[in-house]
Length: 430
Image 1 (cartoon, helix red, strand yellow):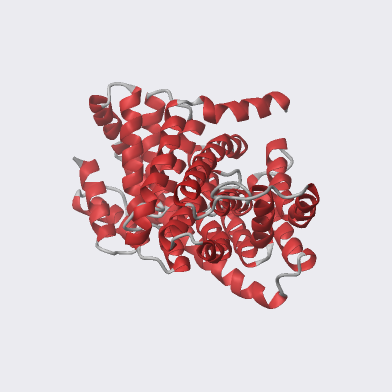
Image 2: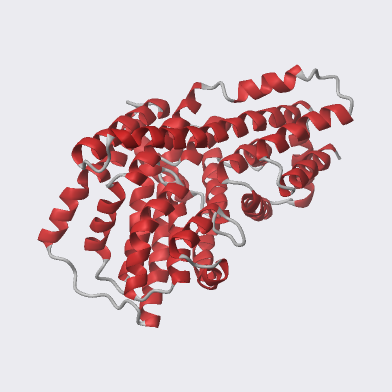
């Protein structure tokens, strides 16, 4: 009963438009007051502060600032040019370039919104000039932008690693194969669309010289994830140290190598990163307060017992998990949704003897889908604005892409080897 009151109260407040942090704290304080619990309200404050104290969370604002740097510099432009030389000759070539550009830039930024905005602003005008509809262009950018969440520098992965206690090194490598499979599924959709509509039939492959020149130009940008991820996987960097290195590398590349950014732009980017990070940290603290009352009152165990009575086998639990996460993600951004859902679902995953790294990839992949699920969604709105398209125009083309990506999510959900193979190989080589 208490679990229904907690979740019901929170969702009512959130759907009423109350700011997420206020909804979380109001639910926590309301439950303590209504049920006459003996906890002093100072406990809420202490749990809030405790939620934002861990050292690893310093990496969040650093990675957010890195994403801002790269989104406003020339990194995205060079990645698109490199992808165009490699893949632009395929049927649906410009769509394929969009997918691969988002995949590569996502490996640098770790942010779906930054990925969508940076790549979308470059490729959408070119797609419209080629004859693609506004709806298809916006839908493809909205979906492809979320590939960033499964790439090794994913910010949601960093937060999940903090909540669950799993190794960021292992988690970052676990998401790479699912990201590549999702990209391959979207590439297939683009090639089918290009051929079936005749809008983009492709052409001749680029010469080796053009590939070499484009590769040299994009090389410093493409080396960034290799450098940062290699440091994490090899054990030379902690995630927090890697985030600091990413900021320095991003500044050097954008300001001194590509010279696409001046000193005057840095204060504005710092302010944007500060606002985003402050919002995330406030939600993390408020989620910590709600997680404290959930843990103290044994709500997670009650929920585990209920799920156990409904889902007697693991595959039924996984279906329920996928549906619940997509529905949650429709109303709440991935980071706060992950912070809310992880403390609830992790005990259930343990009850079904699931690997917590596999669980992290499943949760992140489902919340990524929610980012472009109509009628709301972060990447959906960004792409719609960039393409000047209505949600109705986008939705007509979105379903086939959602079917492709959700098929990959189901495959990842029921084939744990897709998330465990690469980490096991890295551990063997290490």
